[in-house]
Each structure stands twice: as structure tokens, then as C-alpha cells.
Image (tube, helix red, strand yellow):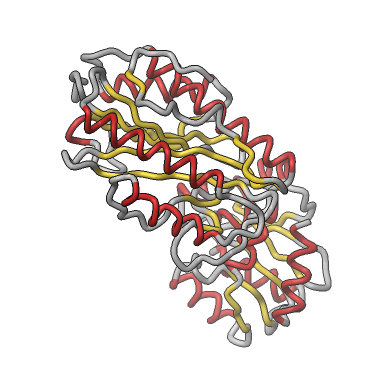
Length: 373
């Protein structure tokens, strides 16, 4: 399906080929996720999709066996790390395919300047068109199998959080609580945790801060945003809890935010512009006594943490069946405490299909309590 869309895009843009080389677009096109593309920036890989020839891949020799086991593309060329520069090999492959002076699409927003300069020195007649967003847009609509994998990831992460928070007690450290979540994520099918942010009390406003040895006290807010790696995809999930005896302000703020999140989720329908969900939240916050400062209220999820479309001002992309979206809302209360809720859903012909185990309770849950699902 991706190749059919790329063929259409190449014809529309007058391209002779597309080269997918960002880690996300390489994975989306080839089906192979190479971890070291992100861990070691110099270990580049390319998927070359000519308009009039068979597609092929170029990867570091050390990654060939893994790539061949994952990708549907049969032709795989390699380069020797520290002996050959990957851009020189890309130039050689384009020349061999008769594309040395062609018009090609490339991920211009990812390609490092030094790599771009080296490629152009080797192929000065090459014409480059930025197709990073064209290729990424193909990933917006998931297949049923991809939706099922993302649901597995979301539910595994959600259940890990439920179990961990039910086991948590006053006096536990942030590190101890988040370790329980991370262990549960792996036990529920992830290869490894992806990110584990959990903060309590006066640390909640540190958006992506690392957990510390700070110990939980009564009447505090616990806020976490966590995810795991599940094959080529990931999870992204957020909840807000109380340490016990929540204050009136905490109860009121949480309940209002939970109401707004459900409103935003119910507004997700085919044909609705992504921006409209942000506008709904912007208007709903003051009606519920909250201050709105969010630059986005959700995003697509897949091989990339924030895929398009993004529910933000200016993104008029119509939502469509098969899109998998994280709806997330957050707010800071009058006591400078931060709250965050995030749930995954799939757009269907009739509206939103929930992929997490269930929405957060309408009243703030205290750690140590079980949550009905």
C-alpha cells in the first residue's frame, strides 16, 4: 500500500525516485526498524524507491542480517563502517540505477548538512525535493494489523501502570514507583521501556523530568507519562493520581480535566480537522475553570512518537478512519501542580475506538487503590 501511495506521489511531484533515510521513514517504507540508526547517528541506512525499477536498501554491513529478517525488500546492499562513507555508497547506488542526475525525493528535514554536502559533491547534477512529509503522511493510516499491535502496546502499558500504582504506598520514592511501571511494561510484551517520567508534589511541573529519590507524602499529586517499545511501534500513556487525601483544589482540577479529555475524544470523527480538537479544548478549559496553555492536545502515534496529524493550531488535516491518535490534555492548577491525562484511540467510520484499557476514573484515584476497567 505504501508503494502505491509513493508511486502516486512521485508522479505528482515529477520524481524519478524517493530515498527514505530518516529512521522513521526508513522503517515505514522498508518494514525494518534498525535501532542503531538513532543510537549511532553515523550509521545511516537508505531505502531507494525508483519510479521505474525495483526498490532496494543500503545498510551498514553489521545490520544486514536483521534487516533481511524484517523487510519485504529483497535487494540489500551494504557498506563497511569506518571504511566507506554511507553517502558515497548512496551516490554509487543512485548512479548504478541511472539516477545520478535525476530528480529525487529525500528527507531534507533529517539529512545532516555534512551528509548533504558530501552527496552533492559526488552527484552535482542531482535535484532534491523534500518528501519527508509526503512519506510520513503515508504512515498516518494504519492497517488493521498495525492497529492491533498499537492496541497491544497501549493496553500492556496501561495495565502496567494500574498494577504499579495499586502496589505503591506513601513513602515510596519516585524511582521505586516508576520501576514498577517499567517492569510491568516489559512483562506485558514490550522489548524495553521507551521513556519513564514520574514526578510528585512540587516536581510535577517538570514536564519530562527524570524520577528521583523524592518520597511520596500525603495529599500530593503523582503525574506520570510512560511508554514502551513494542516491535516497530511504541506506547505513550499518561495518568494523574493522588497520594491520598486529595485537596478540594486537586479534586476539582482533576475532574474538570477528565471531563475535557472525554469531550475531546468524543469529538474525534472522520472529516473533522485535527485543529478542531485543539480549538474545542481551548474553548472548554475556561468554561470548566481551567487555564489553557497547550500547544497541542494530541498527535498520531506509530513508528514515531509524534506523527502527523497533530491536534494543534494550523493543522487542518481531516481525521480519517485508520488513524491512531493519542488525545492528551494537561493543566497547572493554582498551587502550581501539574495534571496530565493521555489515551490512545483509533478513528473509525462511526467515531473514536478506544485502544487503552479504559478512560481514567472521573474522580482522582489514590495510589494503593484498584481501578475498575
